[in-house]
Amino acid sequence: MFSRSKKKKVYVIDIFGVIEASSSSISLSKKNTNMQKVIKTLHKIAGKERDEVAGVILHLNTPGGTTGTSEEAAMMVEKVRNQGIPVVASIADICCSGGYWIASACDYIFANRTSMTGSIGVIMQLPNINGLSDKLGIKQVTVKAGKMKDIGNPFRELTEEEHEFLQGHAEETHEIFKEAVRKNRQGIPADVPEIFDGRPFSADFALQNHLIDEIGTFYDALAYLCNKAGVEEKDIKLQHNAERKSLISRLFSMEVDNSLISLMGDYLSKKTFM
Image (cartoon, rainbow, N blue to C red; front, side, top):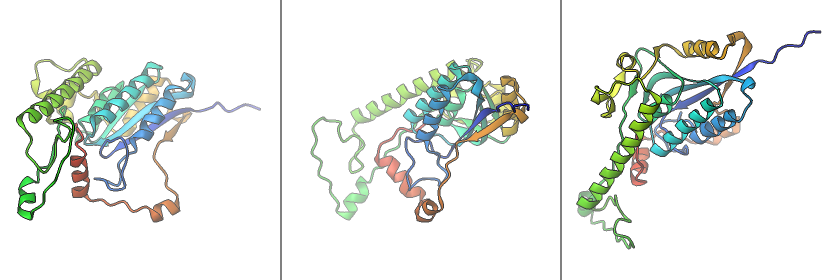
């Protein structure tokens, strides 16, 4: 009898929706990926024997998200690559900001011709309902120790000192982001300043300026990965990270796709987004 050779695994990891540390039942999209599961999966892959894994495809469709989670996921991609396991990114509709940070850490990036990517910038938005609260007769009493402890309090205006502090934080984070992209994508031209001013780019522009490597589909990315790993597609097994909910879970989960509620929640928690 002849023993059948064991197929190598290609891990397909979806990163869809807004990137944040944990998914909430109230979110901008019902399809937000659980990023802690993504990071945990990458950590497990980095610990596997090289001959067990052909590689990883990150399938990205995200506008970006929180800075810390984006950076952590990018670092885990680097950890997988450091084990000699190739990681290829495939951009669907959009891969901007924190999503692009993660993609830039991959060995190779594919994007559909109509994809949008880039947006290498940082944004922090805080609501101010001071005028509305005055009209409604609503007052907030704040007791604090530390003059900036309630920075971003929506019931009052930011002080000039607070604004300068937050601006400095955004600029510092932006520099970290730019440094990571420059390290990951060394072919990016130094004489095109708009690459780092926060604007999104078409796939054609991204290709011309080395933000991506090739125009192509998910299946082009799969073919490239197999070639890089030295295996044929018939000799691999695709391992998806998509979450499967039980029937009971689906029946009793009530996800509210309410953009306004989600945005207010993000604002009030004073998250820094990319």
